Image (cartoon, rainbow, N blue to C red; front, side, top):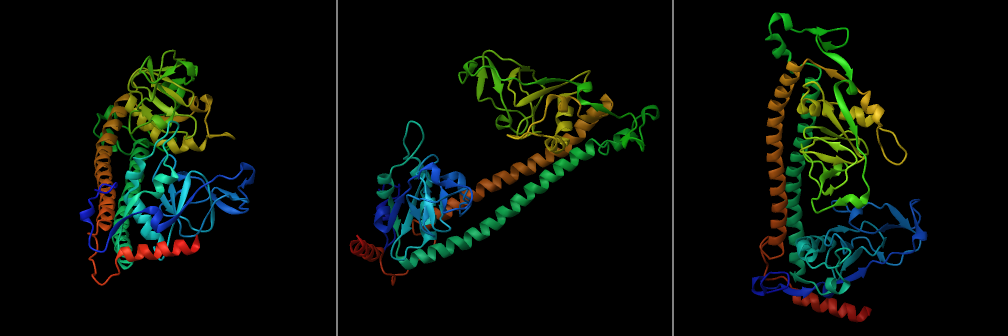
Length: 434
């Protein structure tokens, strides 16, 4: 068995197992002095790690006037420090920091062949990372990494077939993403209609005549509705972060929520707990993010500690949690647009308290929740189906790559020069150069 997990006998005739250093030049990144970095586009684009990566090519955030290590156009960038394994293609001559290495194919081995090859074994490489501070692989691990090498002409056929299949796959994925965007717009349109009174028009018409409502031209709300400040309908608890010494991951104390990062679709998931909370939210309170990003909401699942990135909204006099949740989601973009701040976007407690909302009578609030949930439940099911299909698409992508590099994606041609001959030429080329 090869170290990559594929049996030697599994390779087709003409293929060989070899190491990465035998088919390429490997340039380990080295970060230059920080005094040579700039954002004025002076010098070479400077890439440091995965954060700059795109789908195929990275986007520079900094430039460097005195690079230590240089990658050329077409080199394969690979992240060698947490996370280990992700790859991109170098779009132009660039400076390479120590979070990356550049792999340059020799003697006709094309960039996209190397890119797809390394993506096939991304998880294997990631599994070999070690380190106490962060996961990383060494230059020697990269150089000695075993790979299957097909004949050069078959390499070209493999790349061509992968790109043909990926083009079709990407088209399908794009359609799924478009559907996701349409569902998001539909979700917002449902919430907008709900709090304009449109979803419950039929409900109001079915009520006894003495409580039947019609739309009021004066305030653009159905009769019986009013505009109210949020503080008039709710108790608002502004979060306050307790001392960091009281945080823990041992589930001691109350769940501690700090911001949007802990939010789920409806309920947050705690990452920390707090034994000495400063501010407390109760089960059913609407948690709203008041610091970048402003506006996202979740429901508090149990008594919890809340930090300063959140506020808790507690409905009064029978106002239900889900009514408040859907109401605040309907106005999420409006609230976000009111955020201010030089360091990060945020809204103040006073802005939240004085925020005006449309308030229907309690019976209609319940009807609104019912109408919203009947529509949103359908959206949720469709979104789940889309997520399943997106996962299948990524599994298919990996399946295509695995087939490609086990010799099962394109037919072999017995007239192809074997990979062993290619290795001999690369060896001779290296001996001449070095």
